Amino acid sequence: MSASMMMSVLAGCSGGSSGAGESAGGDSKSAEAGGQKTELVYWTLFAGGDGEYMDQMIKSFNSSQNDITIKNVKLEWAEYYTKLVTGVSGGKGPDIGISHTSKLPELIKAGVVTELDETAKDVNLDWNQYNENILKSAMVEGKHYAVPIDTHPFIMYYNKKHLAAAGLLGEDGKPKIEPGPDGFVNFLTSMKGKLPQGVTPFAFSNNGDDPYRLWWALYSQLGGKDVISDDGKSPAIDMEKAVQAANYVKDLYYTSKVIKSQDPDFYKTFQSGQGAIMMTGVWATGTWETTKDLDFGATAIPSIYGSAKTWGDSHTIILPVTKKEDPKKREAALKFANYVAEKGGQVWAKAGHIPAHKAVFESSEYKALKYRSDYASVANDVVFAKASDKTWPKNDVLKKYLDEIWLNKTPAEAVFKKIEGELKTLLSK
Image (cartoon, rainbow, N blue to C red):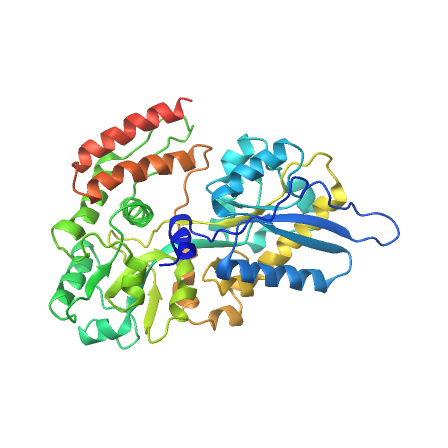
């Protein structure tokens, strides 16, 4: 797996090469009389396929009108949020930025992001044109702080050749999986004796992000609520459901043994045809469809506990706090954001993401896109994290201790007691 692919796996989006100077946000021009264009500096964290598609949308917007010019400044993913906070606090941030919805409350609390409702009214931005589930994830205390452009959920990919040979591919080209927890296990175990030597039923990581995402999906399917209380001050783990979901995942490794032990690169395993199924975010779609001789399908993860709920996040466009607020620049920025979501959404969907704007989501062009339409409905099943400025550190806590379960070091009950204790400390700060 390339370094850029690994960063996609970890982060759910690509990183970019740093191009931001000290004064990148401070040199943009205000709209002035005499027809001078409004130049807006836009900080992004996209590279690879995502970066190319974003570049296309910016170029398209710039050529679609004569009043606004967007200047794209690409930052390294690993440094992006730190530089955004530092830049804004020093009065040298951008006019426009990117934020994951899971990071948004933290940026709001840090005084980095501005609320959008007043400016949205001035430019007639219609929030009703956005997917309700995705839009809600970009709101805090009933206010809009970002324009969502997608959701990128956790889904399942499958190798059609292997499933067909095992008699587990339906005439519709979809996997034949019986509902319920036993149905998915039976689907995987029945393949073990039918797959070619060296092919694993389930190509999957043994630690880190994706096992956490699967646990979150199953915990949500069981009806488990967010592990942070509604007031954000204490843990709220549903212990019984958390343990049940974790033990189900653990058994795939150690009881059913349908996952390759200690697979250092499960993306490569699936890409090379050595895995019958794999689960990760939708960002992998573009990679698989450009892989020679990989006949694959994409679909929602199985409804193991009676619902299709899954993990997901969203890329959004934000208007950071600036040294001097310029209403005309803010209006121009929201016009661009809405353009990206609506007019550019078809381009962005090629990266694998599910578009947030209904005009794109419901269009015949989007429905005609191969693979994407097969998991489009997942947008309504994503269970976003509760709006909290502790979401990102909370996720680190969960992944750190859940790894002990996947590596068979600590029983699930003990792990969640550890998690609860560390969350108490985290949330009390």
